[in-house]
Amino acid sequence: MNKLALTRWGFFPIILLLLISSCSVKKSIYFNDLSTDTALIFKQAAAFTEPIIQSDDILNITIQTLDPSTASLANQASEAQTAGAGSSQAISGFLVDKDGFVNMTLLGKVEVAGLTTYQARERITALATQFYKDPTVQVRFANFKITVLGEVSRPATYTVPNEKVTVLDALGLAGDVTIYGKRENILLIRERGTEGRELVRLNLNRAETLSSPHFYLRQNDVIYVEPSKARSTVRSAPTVQAIGVVTSLMTVAILAITRL
Image (cartoon, rainbow, N blue to C red; front, side, top):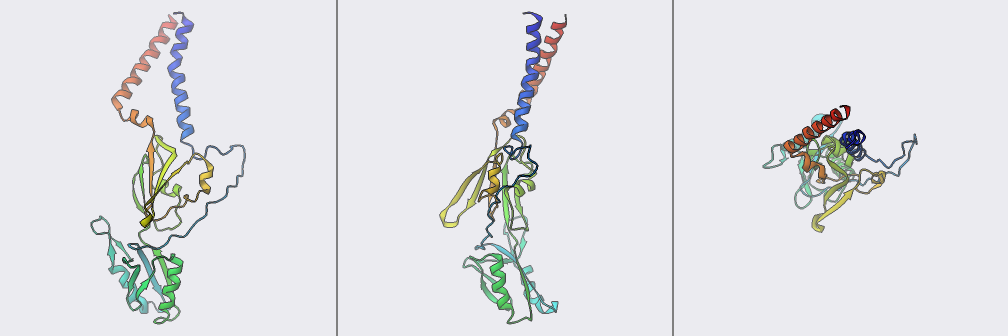
């Protein structure tokens, strides 16, 4: 074998590693179908639908008046009712029972299931005017939780105070997708009550996902990031290290031979 052929073989492992690295970087870029030459790009926004209150939801309900002491009795109930039996963290708030009602001091049982938080606020405000002068009512989800699993830095279940949460927000909470995660194949699992579960695949390599009706999450959604084939190879650390050492030795040996 002549020196030219040996030189080519010596640089082959380096070229191969550069190609693999280039492919990995490209796959790790979100929305890589967008043109980098355009400074301003408009994409149709996904439609946001306000989440609907359901049984077993926990609501943070606060009534405020000009005299804070007059509403303290109703607000104490939100601190007394907790949920999450068997969990490591209890959540304070008003639990929506199986019939769709929350039980509030003075106001009694208020039906909120099937309403948005805005509609629930309007209904509770109408009832509160019977006992308080010019009350201001705030209603928010206390258990708006999403679960992120798979190839992310911090897989876990997250409780967020905001109802307007996107897939990107969830991945941000989980520390982003690792370099071994398939951004083009994100699985969204959504509960549909008696209808069962809805399974949706999202491709974060394409900008059209920004317009997807599933771009905004709902409470109890689960996101699963599938690992790539490269992950199974990386998990075998001794094998990877051995391949790296052998490749390095071969490269050094071939370069040394070409210089003799």
